[in-house]
Amino acid sequence: MADHLSKDLHMMTRLFSSIAAIALSAGAALAEKLPLNEISSYLNDLQTAQGEFTQINDDGSIDTGRIYIKRPGRMRFEYDPPSNALVVAGSGEVVVSDPKSNQGGDSYPLGRTPLSLILARDIDLSQARMVVGHDFDGTATVVTAQDPKNPEIGTIQIKFTADPVELRQWVINDSAGSQTTVVLGEMTTGGNLSNRLFDTRNVQPAQDR
Image (cartoon, rainbow, N blue to C red; front, side):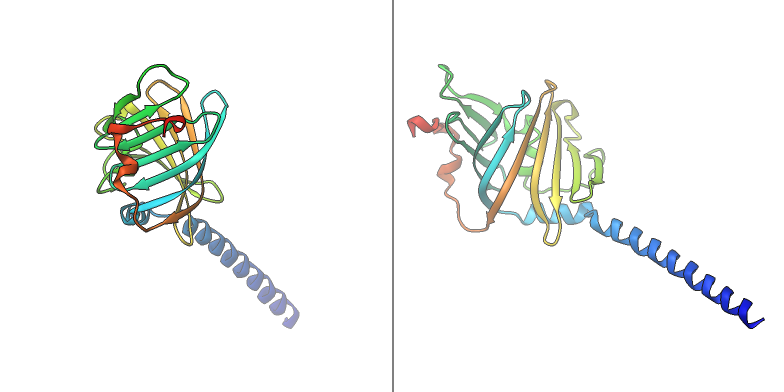
């Protein structure tokens, strides 16, 4: 009798231990996926940032350079040689200057690009039809977002790590069906960035700056 009771207690202990382990594992997995309101708060608190980036283009080619961010509405990509291109977002537009082109810089409304979702003054990822994907890939939270008013312009897939929350990567899928990935290196946040960096009226490629 005592032996049976001992075995039963041992089995129950193992069962409860297994259930607890499963519960803890599930809880840890849920905790690893950042909630949308926490990501929104992080982006709204992000005022300035700068650092190195690596860009993987739709054709598989790779560019590197330096990125500057000044929210709201401003971003600058300075591409390393041999590209030497320059992309500046500011004053509601995005200007692309490429020294390989004989034409002047191309200009696009910022609001017609998925980048506007990162650079908006007030970011609220809980808006209806803005977030179309919210996942955890094992190392980072991945949010796929679109402009709910203009879903046809494409989506941006943004990756965040936790503890502390940091923006690490984004993938833009544009209306033409092409995909561009930007992977961020170590970023320095805070501090002052001159508005001249984001002046779209005088955008010149590196060889002319």
